[in-house]
Image (tube, rainbow, N blue to C red; front, side, top):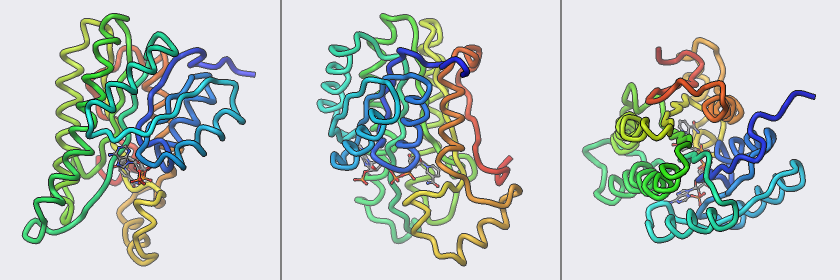
Length: 250
Ligand code: NAP
């Protein structure tokens, strides 16, 4: 059997109740990482945690946290330190869409998406970096999106949040590099989750035509990139955006 690359590491994954976040948590757990499952959806977060515990020999914590609420974020991070004494990996994955054309977009639609997708990441980065700086090590991986790189009509709020997240990634990478904390982003293309389930078969078919690899991505495709950015072998990579998009944007 091959050696586990994340044995005894501690990873916090936000939005891990389902979709890409769940897949990331399972991948990191399969490599030996103890996982802290964070989501607003406590029921599904607990189900994910149970699955991880039954499939992998790792320890877990589960928290109902709204990433926009700094007090909740801080206490989740403090509780993680109390149990595990360290945080090796933070994956900022929680995110939502509220699509509309700019001309029709409400203040509420703009604020909600920016608050969760961008400020939520800032909140977690701020809370973990105090501990990672003391440790003089850490990995922060932000889940951005292809539309944060290329824009997309109907997603002004979402693309701005993900473009902002890419800029945040680069700035924090520069601020924390001296303490051996590596900060990168993964930018998925269209991945099969609840977010893309909303598309009609016709829309999915049309999308596929723009993807050189001619398929939508699987959550595991994103999880594999996150895993790579978590392991020792990627220790000279920081401030980068890894695209996982089947070639749809190069
Ligand atoms: P998903 O299936 O909707 O899962 C997202 C999870 O985050 C849900 O459990 C959701 O809970 C939770 N969440 C929402 N708001 C939260 C908050 N304020 N605090 C904590 N948790 C919160 O989404 P996904 O498709 O896996 O996407 C995961 C990430 O990948 C997102 O950042 C998304 O932007 C990015 N991404 C996805 C795709 C794609 O094609 N799917 C492409 C590019 C990038 P509720 O269900 O209760 O809202």
